[in-house]
Image 1 (cartoon, rainbow, N blue to C red):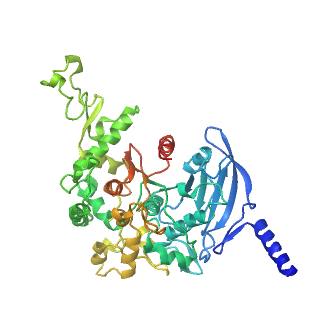
Image 2: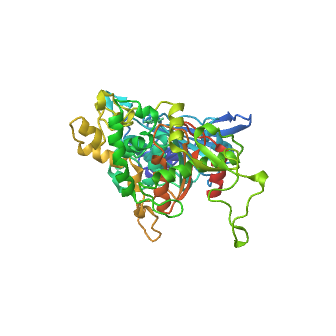
Image 3: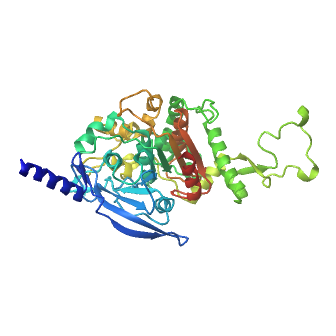
Length: 492
Ligand code: DHB
């Protein structure tokens, strides 16, 4: 009896010394190091680093499947957690330390806990097995979130206030994490990996230039850019561009989107909607002091679009001569020649070929990043759209169709994603309530409709969405951090 008690005491002490073990995963609060980060303005943030936190029981790739967590001085249990993924190009990303120049460093400065999980990608390979093809990178991020929840009580930071942030393919991952919280479609795979049996929904998703909705991105791209001189002068690409462009209207109409005012969005008014979003982008920049070149296709006026409201209910008063409308000089951006603007976008960086994403085999082209992302464990690459598969005389396998479905956040946003307040089922699907989506106004890595459709669909589903084409930005992320963190303060 005495020996048994002694054993229990020793075991308890051992667990206390080594940390916490739950569900076969562990967190040791004593295993940390102190460090500091110097911000671009010279300010220094002191932090405690908890590194190499393995977030699944059945590790397939030791190089990537762990997470680092950084806790700034003074951060307690209530601190929000910024989960930054460095996935880019659908490639594997290592867990790393916070960077002074991006949202991770800024988050530390703002008192947030920063979590940087590694995640597998299309290029991760161990023992000749490509272990990170779709949807593994997403599953790794979900497993990392589950780990944060599993140890929420013993780790600084509040796992109910996770903000996921990523750029490009990482922006797509951020959108997926935001849209697929707790969704049963991923459950079996997560269990097989040995992820914690916890929820994986998040509080907010920050998506910079998300390269997403991949099976519709080719048609969106050609619908947008078909009229540019770059496409029109390319006799080889133009027939493919024409065919893809023709598929877009049916897709847009099938989405049944509404604009910010609740009006139906259709193929017929979609270009007008894009124009108004780009005008909003330019106007926002102009209000902040930007000089917008006359050559891009915008028109300007001293009056707002549609004219000033009538005074005294009567006819519109004539403006004094001095304030007569002065096109291109006025305070308000009132119009945009879309064709001219799209030619400008294509002039800043050559367009992708057609198809822009599912390239493999079409016109003899090589595999794209996305062809590899949907490829097999043997390192193969595959077509993932009906269009390109058909061009190659092949069909999509069930596995590819399933993976394409799991990798598209658009499939998971809708009525069933709204939180069911009465539901006792802790595993019920939950879409993040808050979204910050940015896409550069001259980003040509995917067509403008891709991020806009994501934003409109979320808005329609009742989410809080802050969307903008960021003026004059190319394909990039984690910019305008003052604005991002002001928004974050607002939603906390
Ligand atoms: C990224 C960029 C692309 O153009 C693309 O097709 C996929 C990913 C990226 O920067 O992550």
